[in-house]
Image (cartoon, rainbow, N blue to C red; front, side):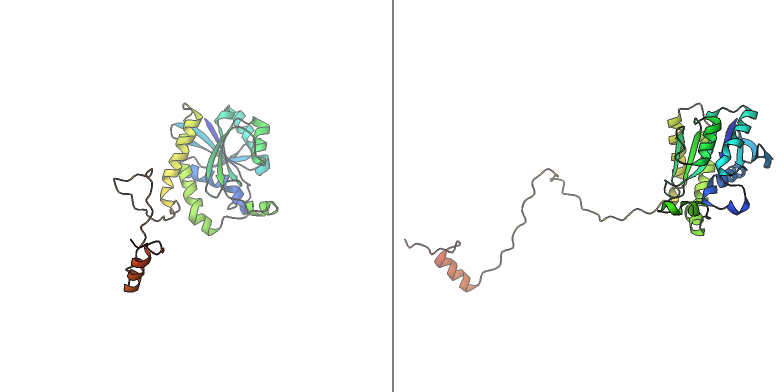
Length: 251
């Protein structure tokens, strides 16, 4: 069995916050894969079901974000779930909005929810990092993450990205494959699902191809200079002085 943990804060006022995107993805997963009715257990709201060919427990800890590890440890102990089968879903300030990255093990990068899970379980779990962008000023971070996604964000990327993540999740549970291969396939699948919403490419001016008998390595000839037609006076002076302006010597 896998333990999939959405990180967030439990009170209703936080439900639509950027910091609760892990909870929001957990809810999408329950709906997309027809999980059981959520119930309260392990200081969390949990639901059981299958994702692909694997059993999974989806969890939304009710201990608040910074204490998520308490609920994770209780469920992992009860079901005997090893740390390598725990997947944490969380927001990531250092990624552009809608950017998705995976991290297998390692540090928490300042995320207190991940720190809590690490303190209780070790750091060998998988993280699904969901970019929410950065406000640009560290003094505004708390207000930013505890604010709701705007309607524009919901329309432009949040809803589609969460749906794509939920649909691609079975790939992450294929533990019989190398982690790098699983991660690459997972991210490629999401990119394919979101391809229609990718920003348009910048238009570039078309450059005509060179003739078949030319190559980029051939030396370019200087452009021909346009010669003006001579008038009668210019023709007479040329006869007297020559093309170089010096008077001709008589024979």
